[in-house]
Image (tube, rainbow, N blue to C red):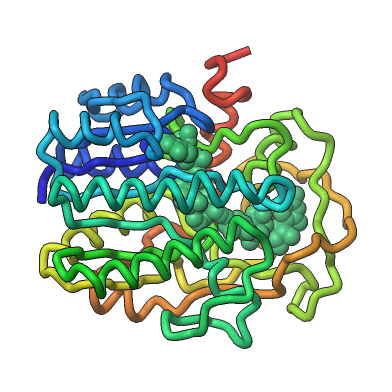
Length: 342
Ligand code: NAD
Ligand code: WQD
């Protein structure tokens, strides 16, 4: 499999995966509606790889553009990153989330079937485990109990993919449940560029470091964990990108539906992450303890055995590396992709 259609390929995880794919000799075609990313990402991809991927400005809900893409390119495999992902926003505008994410995936799959493209990789999330009864979680843990519409879109799409696979055995599908991707490309040319106030921990911290936010609010220090803050499995976005290559290789063996958790297997608290960023910064980062955030689970991290044994996936970066690269990106691009320096 050499020709990969990456939907959402100018987004945070998509762009890093595109670089990884190009570096490993894959031909990449991107479709993105730029609802949460910028075209300048293509320049950055080109600077890093010396290759400019073919880009279609378009929406995965638009059958015409998908027909055009599949007619003009021989696609072997589709990686579907396209989707809305802000948890809080999904509570406010659930229908937009269901329409964009679920309807979008359905249209994309229908178009794939029509054009006889049967390899599909789906960006799912550890959020499908809800509040796990114990940690680490493995892929056999029950899914459900999602705490917001965003998470529910991931859960429903997973179910749709299982049904599709049963009905049409031509399909080979990898469902990848990401834990907490953070970090940036080591070049400092690509990274996470959220709109407005960041919802997630790492981009919030880097915006404090660059002086855009006053201090980090730590959402609760009274959880039942060693330092009282929640525990997550942070994974470097470049490791995560490589996980998609492992999944492509797996699909070549025509496995039907396969599911992998992608994380490091190591749980880190909010304070652990803060301290990793302080190490990269060389000075303390201001913070205060704030109330708990609704919907947060105490701890979630993964067992790595299945991904390691079946697809050879091993994360090589630790949280110090993630913090160093995220800081390097933010420092070089204080306003994200908007302007290089200001
Ligand atoms: P992102 O917002 O940076 O990237 C998503 C991209 O998809 C954006 O470039 C956006 O413009 C595009 N897009 C959205 N809807 C589209 C549509 N209908 N048609 C075409 N393009 C569309 O997000 P990300 O962090 O790179 O996440 C990528 C995927 O991984 C998402 O599906 C997300 O839900 C999933 N995921 C992300 C995380 C995380 O913490 N970042 C964790 C688990 C899963
Ligand atoms: C991590 C920890 C917060 C911000 C979310 C989505 C999930 C997936 C990944 C998907 C928690 C704490 C955060 C802040 C804080 N997304 N925190 N102050 O909630 O594990 O997962 O992103 O696509 O679906 O739910 O990640 O980075 O928001 O939070 O104290 O300003 O940091 O309470 O313990 P989360 P996060």
